[in-house]
Image (cartoon, helix red, strand yellow):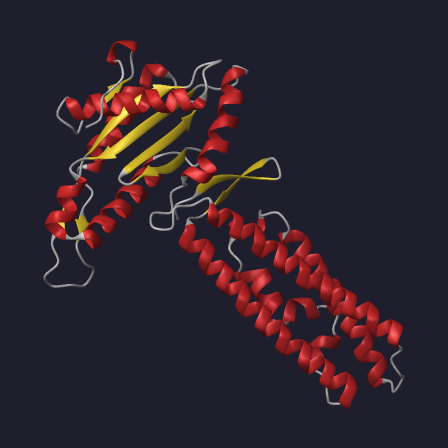
Length: 318
């Protein structure tokens, strides 16, 4: 699975692309519905004296309900490191302990005091609040991703690059920026259609993310242009590493339609421009330099890599 580097509570965590986040959010919505159904059955047992589920009386009730099974076994590993997930499990356990207490008193024929029931309702409210907070966290992550490709978007890019610049300023890491522009992308759209163009963008993104390190960050800079932020990348091997990316991209097949007998397969290339973050130089300047370098690569005939140098000057875009 392709993973993206993000920051949670000051720590770097890794979460999957947008489609996976949306899938988990849909799972959480289903669990909320399951939980509401369970709560209705619990209230029916308490108010009407209907038989309760024996699992709800056990000390492991929080493992037996649908939400508990999802939490224990079905929630993906990356979600377990997201802020608030551990607290959610603790709250869920406490709520079931409160429910078990009420069910036992009801089974013993003892009246349930309003104060006791209010305590249980508070536990239910706490759980719902933590679920909503987890959903909000996932929504915030989703907002930072391009919905088509799953790459980071420019909304979150600026903050991440500024933090990276701070590390460079403190001489803690080197950092390479690589601007990548898919060659003749308009021709792809004109020849194969815009849906095929979207497929090319997705194929490009997946290839770059699978070919780089988990802590490298890929952003969709605009249209068919992408920016790769690669910390701990020294100048000595930068060209060699980027050239491997460029050459490998030429072998990536793009199809105009899955399962379509008339589908065509084509390949794309890209031009690459390299620049390095420097102490005391704003991240925006490093991006500008990478953009100048990719323009030089385009001017040199496309499908090649150029490293920024002061002699390149400032390109005039038509």
